[in-house]
Length: 88
Image 1 (tube, one colour):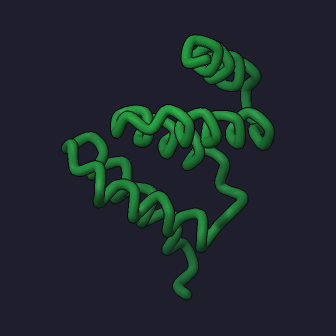
Image 2 (cartoon, helix red, strand yellow; image 1 turned 180 degrees about the vertical axis):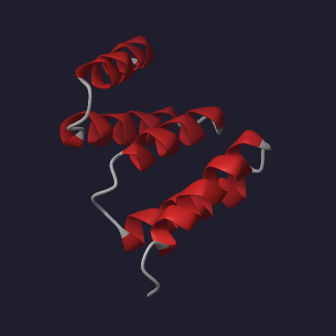
């Protein structure tokens, strides 16, 4: 493993997602979880990705994982909770 490799995969996932290459984005985001399970923001990205792919159940699971593990500003968790409630 190369130190910081997970952050490279995260950035590549974000770029791929913005370009509409959801399959590549998913691979990069999943790699982030393999290399750094504690990087919580990737859960939000995976939620957005699965929502775009029409997999609402998986999106909900990722959003829930984000909310349960998020330690950053509370407004980010609140925004995800609001999104989550609109999906249920």
